[in-house]
Length: 302
Image (cartoon, rainbow, N blue to C red; front, side, top):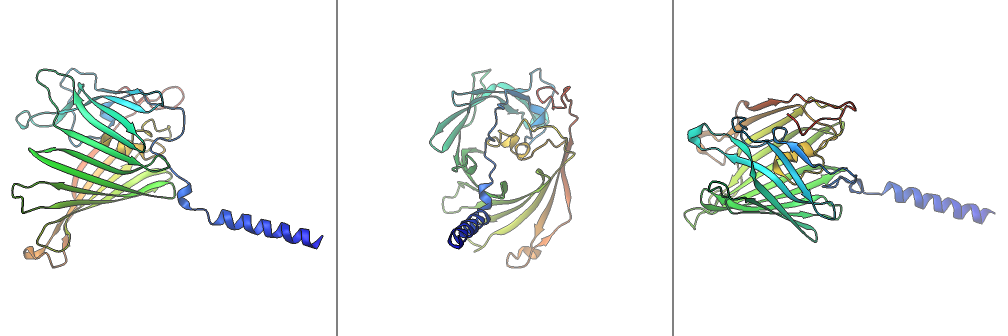
């Protein structure tokens, strides 16, 4: 009897030890959460582009998706078309632009294309996203034309306790002088409150061939607030830049603010400690959402 009790106690200890040693990364958030929801379309004004969108042009401004037999996005219809500086800048959503997605093993290949329309073309571009065993985005590499020169961006993502916690973007573009090169870095840390993204703090820096360390350029902080209690329909769209921020939360933010602080090196002495200059307001935007009878956000109307 004593022997049996001893065996039982040993088994309990082993079980408790196994449970207590489980890794935090076992609790994961996949790039595409495991559920039966697959977004068909959304109104483009709920996304976040690096410029303001114009309503002057008579287009639907709807972004829509096609799926393959494995319920993976195979094509995204609609994208931003930038206006020339002479027109005041900005852009509008054009339904002749689309993105093709091809899946190979743990990689997604994305390429932006255009249906011929009044001479409309798209600069050469290619994005490759690598996924881990949990289907989370761990590396993204983008190659595109930048002012008639090749530009390459690589972003690495880090997860902890089931959430994306940080990512580092490294940019490199060829200079007119082949003997000179500069690398640009963006190091971002993400903060959450109640499963919703609270802020992203990014430090911008650069490294050339002369100074033996990174030169701090700017600190940028993005704030997300005014969350509703509705389910997030953008939760499977983390792979797209304009819906990346919205994809990270349980609910939906209705207020966005971005500030920045430049770093100043006195007398251009990059060996000195840089001074963080006063905060500047970069952007502020709010959205008014409409909801259906079940309290869910009507995201395909504006």
